[in-house]
Length: 263
Image (cartoon, rainbow, N blue to C red; front, side):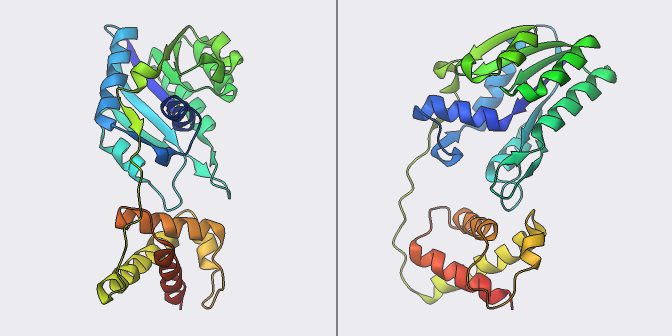
């Protein structure tokens, strides 16, 4: 039986999608994805390139958010046929370990004869040795570029068996500029204060159990300034809870309540 798996490097994917939609690379928050439409585009691409070949699944590789899984990761989890695979992040928020996961999965699935074909969405030369090793075991590997092929390593392009690209027309089927979030005026009220306190308490739990738990456990009551990793995670949780950008006053109050909770 012929079967295919898709291997998507989310870091590469987001850089290329945002470059097409915004005209230059920008943060993920500046672009919004329609995940059901992305699912449809990916399955249509598989059917076009591999007619008559069964799909095993689409693997989506990314680093965790500052507080664990992000809203994007949860949206991927909700898609049929997609499987989220998380690497790690270093101290400045860069994803790590993704290339190793892709290589391990490609080789493992090929060795176990779980797949006969692979579609790779990545531009990283580091996965080239894994592609070559899998090809030596009989795997046929196709490469899907997002945007300009020049953003993909020439070493990777030279080794794959087939290459195709998604241009802006294809990407616009599932991606668009994110709406600009304007901070709404928030009245100083008991209700607002209670809400900030609740968010701070939730953040204490999430950050204490998240990827920065080691840094969190070293914090002491009365700390003057929060470490950058903890502060970024705290504000991200606040933004997710309120559904908008926090005002400067809200950021100040949230930090104050969070530090008070360390006692």
